[in-house]
Amino acid sequence: MIEDVAFIARIVSAYDATDHREALRRAFAGIREWVRVPKYRRGLVQFEQWMRIVAAWAPIAHGRRPRLSVEPRTDDKAVALGLFADLRCIAVVRMFSTAGRTSVRNLKAARYQLVLETGRVLWDATLTDDDLQVAPPAKASVTTVAATTGEAHQEASQRVTLLGGALVVQVLRGFETGVVRIAWDFGSEADSER
Image (tube, rainbow, N blue to C red; front, side, top):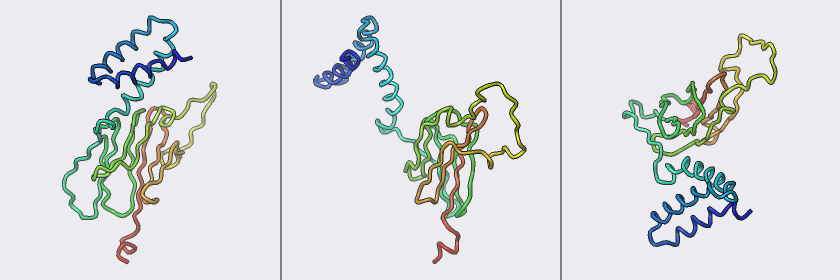
């Protein structure tokens, strides 16, 4: 059992060294050599899983954040949001009115973030195929498809309410790719003038 987590002790001891970077490099190389020692193989698998998780979050840990660059606003009330997939901007939503909605289609499994033009991350989620794709029938069967199977009638696999309910993000399943629907309602013009 202790062999399963021996990699942790190896990493911790590397931080005791004067040159952390070199000590960590040696520790990681040594841990990978454990593939040759049967009692450490399970621990090596766990170490590799841990490294994949760390690598996925490393850009955030090292200050790499999604950056949304948009042209200057043409309307003082316009707000821009960026939808990012694995730190790459895939859509910019300009909200010129107090209420509306838009959809971003053809989404595949990735880490998604919704970011205000100020840099504030409003939503951060890793979406899997299960979140984005309709599950195939368990057994061969005839599937009846109604004429009302468009986006408006899709059931959301995830629904997140942000900014006190003014912004709603929904993840909708598709047959091969998913959709993120972003809806906002910041109140009517009359309400904001009171």
